[in-house]
Length: 395
Image 1 (cartoon, rainbow, N blue to C red):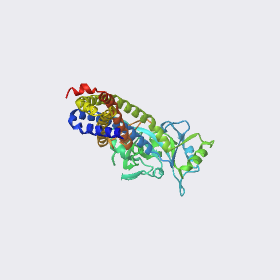
Image 2: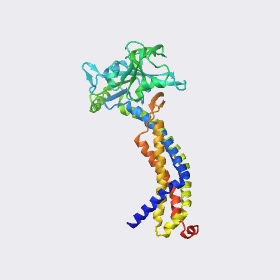
Image 3: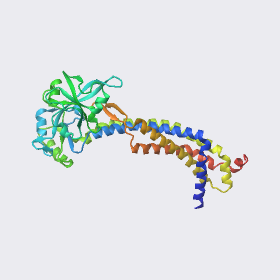
Image 4: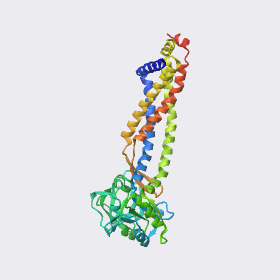
């Protein structure tokens, strides 16, 4: 166990001398913290977007679209088809009411509040059962729209991100002027980016006739999905695809999430190279400053392994400090920051909040430690190989 005691003693001595090299140590810590801030901030965009999209789905709901459609924008269902869909077994029924909503989906132009540039905002025509199907949605301001009129309710995120969506505002869409009568929340999901109105009124505004794009149903239970799907896909009157809602929105977020993560890792890798060189210079400076001290320890019988580990430990401690500071700064600066981006599947805006999750903070700390290890390895090897005689001549 003597070699363990040697390692502990030399490592503790190395860490105690960090204040003597405060300037160079601070450079390494700040450099690594900067990389971690960017790394965590960029990836928090992907996490927030994914959470908003996945949060829009529920395992107790299913989405029915035309067979072959990969999004509601490319789907189309006739009114008679939606009536047949609502007869399928497995749908939750509240007395005589079937909890299914045949819906229409269009895109309208509204200016962003921050830049006043036009943005594609999703507008959804719903049926009166929609709020029962989406039981997480609730009004937080104003009142519910009256079906059969040109009224709409706006999602909370939409009202914050886009101009002209406060209660009482009027919006021109299609051949109709709509009045915003309420604001709703839906658990921070992508549904909060949407504007909801009466499906029949929206059909008239866009001359869609008796047509829809999807039917959203609330299932009796998650286990009812197979019964529901099999009945619809085997019905010769229909040509539809059936997906769990949560799977549909997860697929919608996959492309953009993958793109953001790829960009994030790329940026972090490039910045990490600079941080590693900073750590190398810092640790080389530390080794040069401690040359006589290291030589003395070697002359007293401390082995090369203890010296190598002590230098690596110092580098890792500085990296951990940088990682922790970067993670804290990223959390304070970005977590919960509201923004919006384009959903490449529907070409409409999705409002979401940056999400700095514990997993991202752990990844950031791990990346910082990796930079610290790489940056400290060569200086540690040099310290371990430092000739005792030449270093002692400087005494």
